Image (cartoon, rainbow, N blue to C red; front, side, top):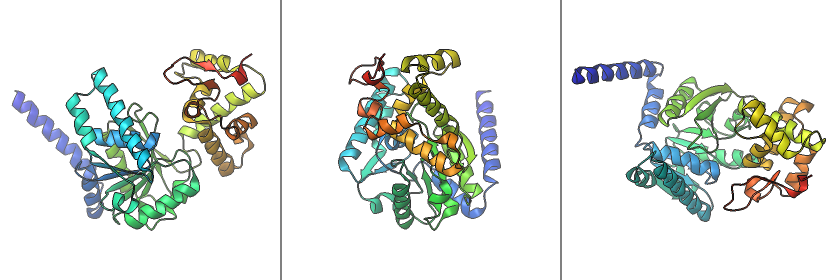
Length: 334
């Protein structure tokens, strides 16, 4: 019976696979099979928090990954971070020591864009949330990556259509917005640009599933879905603090205990980075022309002062290395 069950399950799997593949024309089928094969090279451009997290999940899923960044020091820190995160997974029993070694063996680093993307079947850009920088990177990716490679961006708010417009392959440009921390968070927000080919979308959906993620396909409008809903909430929390309605702890406590949020909006803003929050709000404000998206003056002042949240050591809370205690910044203590 065990053999029969195995054959039935194999047949079901193949039937489902063939059903999915029937949606592809011959050319795009070749692209799909190339990317879905874990021997196909994947390149991640950007070695920061999101870049190393994205590289981590691809490598852990068995893909050969190259991380590209102009800073060799940043590349080395990225690999070290991935190693530490894998150590946590080993300690929790979610992976074995052997799986950790295999994951790290799947990762290469390169400080040269041309060499880093020349063999890639998929390139995922994960640079800073800066429009001009991303456009420049996509121009280079388009120039040096294979002509049939899919170019994805991890942007959380910048127009996919605008990014695609600087390339000669708009139909192969797509948003692949991972959530932070990437190895833990299940969601991948997949964003279609105006010209994104349906088969490219289908490929990225299936690939996300192969990474153990849950894909959600949305269309290209400012903030997409995740940040169009999240950022106005965070901005309103900052306005509530700015206008003296309540303090930092009170605002976060109401949302955690009253709305069952695992983290209050001000703590979450610190975690995301106040500069990132400001950049996204400006994209929403500029994109919709609606004053409801205008960033709070307090947020603007904090970013100007260099108080960016956890990464700078202070935002709405004060952060000390080695401590997990939530301590309200002295600027907001009563």
